Length: 388
Image (cartoon, rainbow, N blue to C red; front, top):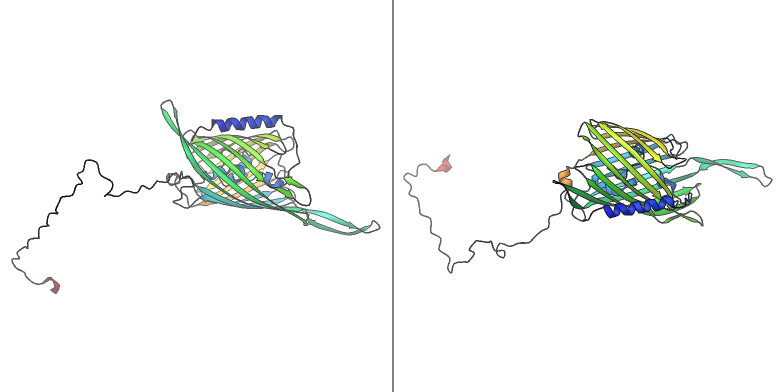
């Protein structure tokens, strides 16, 4: 596979053009698809496109699912956001052993999630004919349900020589599909479908990675007569992971995202530090967001590499300083040596048809008779063994 430089250049051109485009906010529907999910990703300022190594890859870059080396169950809750509530349950991990992917290059992974959001209640007043208040009741303002699935695998490797050193660059591609069911004021309903595509380039020895994704590409959401598009978004980012393995682990990332219909362009940056692979701190900042951007914070705790607690908070969260809690459990780890196995082509061969070089395979005209075995004389037969 060729070098990823042309893809990176295309993204830079797209983002440069978007910066000069006229802003057109408020023209999309399905705002729940724009809510930053995953406490870990939020703590890093949502600079997660090139990191994407947990179940949150479904929301930022589905190609990152290939980095899951164990089965992972996650539950995320958004709290402290007024009457709005949101919960998400996600499951992801490597595909069954022996499946090397469609292209046969290994690292095949799949994930699925269920998200449910409620917008609180609104008061509805009904007036009599004379203008007086007839009745008053509270109804649900709205709710959203999102069912999502994704798949990713490695599609190739590129050897790169730098001086006397050789490096292998892995290329991953992922796809996702989602179904959105939205309810407004308990009366109006709408459905929409969308797809996600993602690409991830990773160089394990140096720790550098590059990711790009296009999210929420699909149908429009229609409650009555008017239909509005979903919030289609393009993302791109770079990341570096390094440190002293098992003691100090550091991740630094930077992202850009562009809302295609709203013509809004943002920059995100974040960092994560883990000590002894157990205690983690996160810091991030969201730029170019006058009403929503700002500082983000978070922490993480890992117990025996299985039980995980993550917390994230954003100063300008669009849900009103909402806090995110993610609980996860990992099991059934698969070694990287198994994950990276490639498909072996089967070559049919026959000893009678495939001659061996340097070996005389001609048959003699007549097979030599096999000599009969000679009888061995017995000096004393003794007692028959069956008696014992």
